[in-house]
Image (tube, rainbow, N blue to C red):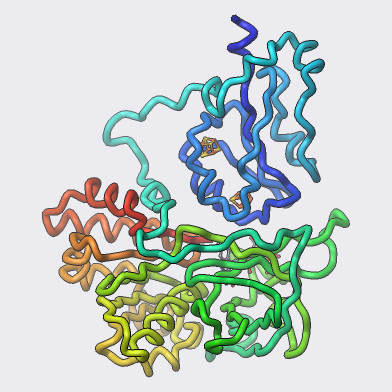
Length: 423
Ligand SMILES: Cc1cc2nc3c(=O)[nH]c(=O)nc-3n(C[C@H](O)[C@H](O)[C@H](O)COP(=O)(O)OP(=O)(O)OC[C@H]3O[C@@H](n4cnc5c(N)ncnc54)[C@H](O)[C@@H]3O)c2cc1C
Ligand code: SF4
Ligand code: SF4
């Protein structure tokens, strides 16, 4: 019996399929996932098999388990060197380790004990826990993982222009990719992976980078098999040091007629509601506007068709300056009775810093009413650093209106009505 207790289902990530998007690391409630420049890995002594990371993973590479004697569990130092997953141990190898083949527990059953709950009041605010992993009930069916890094498809660049008024260092490009006759069904809120050509410092092909789709389901140009992306040219890292982002610069420099390797589609929960009178509250910064553009444009097309009665659309959109805000010009042309737009700029010379959460607090009364309305759907997308402030603003707006935030948040999550996608 002692031997059985020493057997675990070790949780592993497939390095061949993983697109290094960080979603699992951001989701794991106990910090069991970590990464380096090469791989994402799971700490066997921390993972409790709660499965919270499984459904948000866009590729399915997270869902790998190996029956292992606990003492032989692969350490993260070894996992970080892998280019592929090791095979299952054979019955003979398990027997040699003193393991009865029938003793393997279900994922998590013989993992470590979950960490004890901290003292009440000492829990740090974890915004990621509020994000839903279910789509709204009226979302359309999303196709995912039709093309993997081993079997990418080819798209042709049909357009590429700077969609900001900013210069090279802060520019964001609107890029249109055409799939010709190749199937690539997409919904608003999904993303694709772009495989940059060339190799990394270790001589391996570059990993794909993920980009949210900025066009609606029937194409950037209605009826065409194309999509658009909103790609920021990365010229400095998150600490502000100069760097040349591999994929973002590759995409921003593409010329019309160039071909690109594409994987995906990814994402099955950050999807828009399709029922009449459903409200959509969108909170984004920078390129986090891509899925919001897709949803807004789909609603605009439906409205123009005269066959769909939409609910409220509210957009809170932030950037450092107006010049860096993607699609600033086109946004001004949307009818006021169609979408309620609030822009926040954090680095306008001579102006106080404004963030999206500040604007949300200014509209607290409207947002409080929407939080209590079962037809409301909330979407947050942008850099990781914005997520906590936005969820805290929602919490404060709810409590300020005398609402039970934890109850509302649990309902929003259960019903797939609060989605967080930050990177
Ligand atoms: C779900 C998801 C959706 C995404 N959608 C979009 C999108 O719509 N548009 C978009 O432009 N990007 C998006 N990204 C980010 C994108 O996948 C890449 O991470 C980004 O383009 C940088 O890749 P790179 O190859 O240019 O930089 P790399 O060569 O991978 O990195 C270079 C350096 O820059 C840092 N860095 C990475 N990303 C950024 C960033 N965004 N800002 C500042 N520094 C960074 C890295 O930490 C590294 O130090 C998304 C990511 C995820 C996970
Ligand atoms: S199964 Fe749970 S504990 Fe393990 S890595 Fe995934 S989210 Fe973390
Ligand atoms: S693809 Fe899946 S396993 Fe890889 S980093 Fe993203 S969420 Fe994690």
